[in-house]
Structure formats: structure tokens, C-alpha cells
View 1 (cartoon, one colour):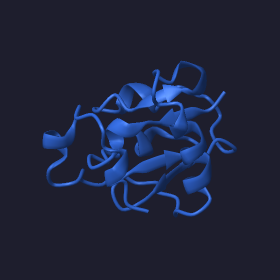
View 2: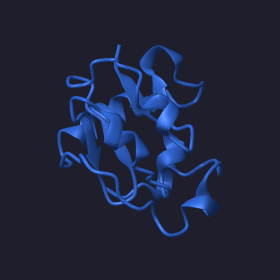
View 3: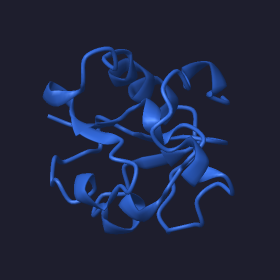
View 4: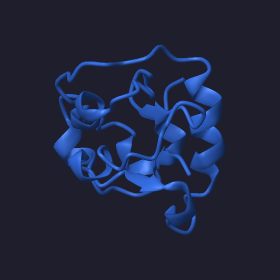
Length: 107
């Protein structure tokens, strides 16, 4: 069961999770990260590292966030792999926890 990045990552893009991933399954877009479900080995290391609490096991994705399962699978095929920690987006703290960010996702 792979892990999934959900809406709260949009416009935050903390990359603490990337550093601990043993299989390099994270992919980076302009303002969001995704996990490749085919590469994720369900090691659980990334989930506690996310300051925005935006990573969940696929079976535990919160209600209303289920669309992010398919979105992670889709975008991981298009975006490049990210393997090193980078600074979050400049206004990440302001966006952390704000609902309704899906329209702000940059592809």
C-alpha cells in the first residue's frame, strides 16, 4: 500500500520527506510533491517527516482527499524525481492548513 501526498502540500512543498525515502519515489512539481505508487515500498519513513501532515497511507487518506491517490499516480509519471531536501516555498507557513488549495496546483 503506497503513501499519498494530499492537498495540504500544495503551495507548501516541504521536502523533509524526500531525504528519508530509501527508494526515491518522490517527484517534484512547481508547488507540490507526489509519490510514485509503483516505487513506494510502504516503509513509513516519510509520513512523520512531513511538517504539513500531508502524507498518508493510501487506505487512510482523509475523506475528500481520495482524488489525490490518482493525482499522485498521474503526476509522478510527468514530474522529475527529487532526492534532496530543499527549502520550502517562501510562504509555506502561510499556506499550511488552508483548505481548498487544489485549484492552485501548478502542473
